[in-house]
Image (cartoon, rainbow, N blue to C red; front, side, top):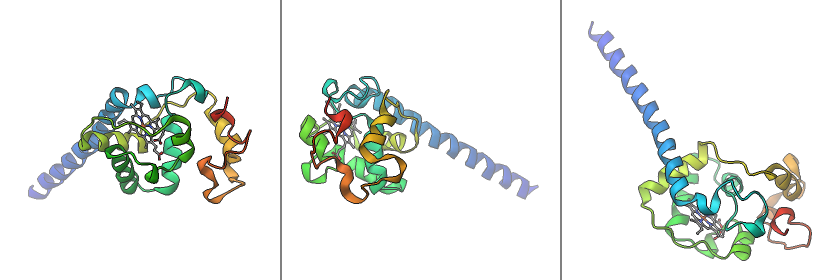
Length: 164
Ligand code: HEC
């Protein structure tokens, strides 16, 4: 009897921690909408001259390449939002184009939830995003590989959506 009880206990515990994990992503989504989406949301499309900042789908892509596991990804986003600095930027082209991101008044707990949502939640995919990635990064093959992905070589026409 006792073991059945503890199995039920463990099952209950697992179920509640699963719900808890999803809650975090959902909380992160709401916090993202409130604190980040004005600038990083999907509406606004890929026309960078009409946007305030790159869409989060794109930011995520750059960050996940350097920080493929959740822990370091969340750490990098938290450190960025805590103090945006040019030296830390993974997307120097965006800093040049939009200027450095201002300090956003959010707590570290909130940014952790937001970062989890960015890592594993469903982000808005702005219209034209896939074409942009293909154009900029040569599709899945990453033809011009390596570090060349920060859009920073500034060659005309090379930056597709970022220019027009
Ligand atoms: C007022 C507009 C604005 C808001 C609100 C905003 N950002 Fe940004 N963000 C920017 C701009 C502009 C850039 C591009 C320039 C840069 O990288 O500093 C940027 C870039 C970023 C980057 C990439 C940094 C890099 O260069 O490597 C991350 C990550 C980021 N934002 C996260 C967030 C998160 C998370 C939130 C919400 C808590 C948020 N931002 C809210 C304007 C904003």
